[in-house]
Length: 339
Ligand SMILES: *Cc1c(COP(=O)(O)O)cnc(C)c1O
Image 1 (cartoon, rainbow, N blue to C red):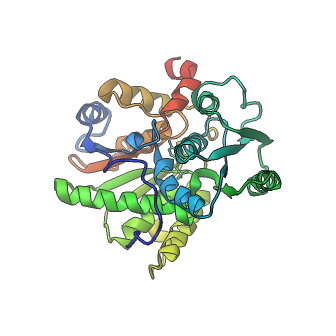
Image 2: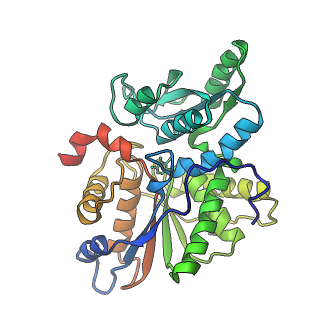
Image 3: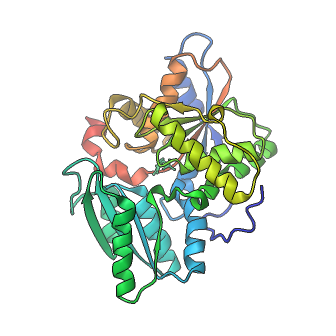
């Protein structure tokens, strides 16, 4: 699949590391059924650029290139109060010399605080131009359009990026990741029996599905939901993957069988801690000094741990965990993580 006809900014030098997690794998093996302990590897997309980077960095390479091509001077995007996507969009905007405004959805009532730590602190440190806070269930596209109208009325040129950067163009970032991974597997002589990714606004999972299909990478891909169970999440991922392939002009249909979602690890609610998340965050920190986050990667890794303990993989099978970032949110949850 040829991504080269799409304008792209680069925010990361080279490929993110693809490395084994021997101490974590040994700790996990102690709680797996006999003969069912996988060898866990990690792809460090938490080391992407726009520090501290994460999966939105890859999507923004394509989205910001389009914004610049259209002469935008103000980027508008949306997210939750601890949104990594908003923080990374703001960082990319600063890098490009553009202004940036957010619409923040208070998905959990009362969760927005002007003095919050974590990503919200970074919004302020980076000097976000404006934040509009709206209640849960608001039509975010319409709310961002209203902000764009204000920018235009003031003589500016807005460019709106959807939540999570998850449209077809943003999804190209994870096609690029699939291609990068394919090269690394070839160069390092490493095969995987499964790849575990997060599945939220679906650009990451959908981009990987599109990239695996288009590049004929025949490794099972599992998307652990961070806000929806498979019945609701899988159709979103399927639609995103199809939109990406269509944008690329690849004549492939994404079938239901091409999308595997895992549920049960995000409850009670998006961004609300659970015991599996706390265990996963502590385990990775204490065995490998890898920092997960409370909203996404802690729950995604809890999904990998849960599948392993259910005997999903045999001894020696290799499972790759895609670390999508999110570290600053740790500082907004310090009580829950050490409690
Ligand atoms: C946004 C995000 C995800 C989810 O990725 P989507 O592309 O929205 O599905 C996973 N991990 C982290 C750290 C994120 O910020």
